[in-house]
Length: 123
Image (tube, rainbow, N blue to C red; front, side):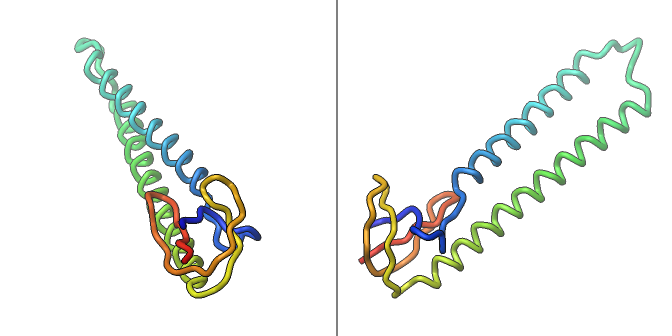
C-alpha cells in the first residue's frame, strides 16, 4: 500500500508546493522568451534597440536562466532530503495517510520516488 504523507510530519514532502512553484517559474520563463523573441522580430529596422537596451535584455535573459537553474537545483535538493528522511523510516512502524486520506498503520517496506514526491510503501 502506498502512502503519500506521514501523520506527525516526519517524512512529509511539500510536493504540491514544489509542483506549483515549478509550473509558475516554467510558465514565466517561457512567456518571457516568447515576448523577447516577438520584440526582436517585430522591431523597426530604422529604429533598432540601442546598445544599452539590448544589453539590459541580454542580462535579463541570463539572470532568468540562472534563477531557473538555481530553482531546479533546490528542487532536486529538497527531493533528496525527502528521500533521505523517508529512507530512515524503512523497517519502522508508522501511521500514515493513504491516497484517499484514510489512516493506515504499517511497517515501511520501501520508499519510492514518483515525479516530485516521495512515497512510502507499507507491507
